[in-house]
Image 1 (cartoon, rainbow, N blue to C red):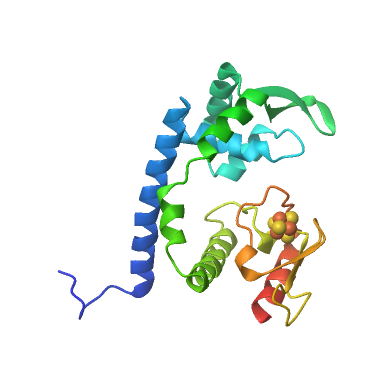
Image 2: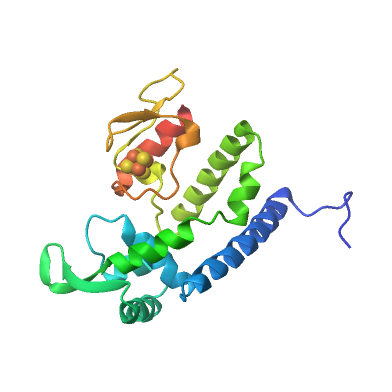
Length: 214
Ligand code: SF4
């Protein structure tokens, strides 16, 4: 039996803790999805499509969600039957199909987005500095998972071509986003930004080094 004097490594217990938080998030996702008659993957697809400037190919959707292409295809077909997405031409290739969200899909997403989930409510109970520290720790863990190819590249500042870490050294908002041309601080670091555009590998590595060095 595991006791306080004979614990598993802290890294293992952090992973256990994240798994418990993920359990609450999954439960919330099911509740939200069921309220709109959808599955969590279908809801995640709507969330991905809503902020995009252009329609997305199925392989892009699958890569973003970390699911297989057949799973993404099935989910897109179900959403299309409900009128939440529609097929259109891919940007730059009129013969290729791409998926765009409809106004009915936007309405469905807006309806579930108004409900605060349990994990967000729990995170809000932490003091501001603890929230910021936790956010930065999660960024580092997510970045490591990306580098290890355990998850696809996420739409976070650390991998974005618009991110300029510590461009305003010493300021309360030290970082800069070239997309909106504005400074921002650690607590405003984005994990899933709809304006994100993935930087090339060399830029990503250089940006991360600059971010780490501070
Ligand atoms: S566009 Fe979004 S992800 Fe990119 S740097 Fe700006 S806020 Fe961050």
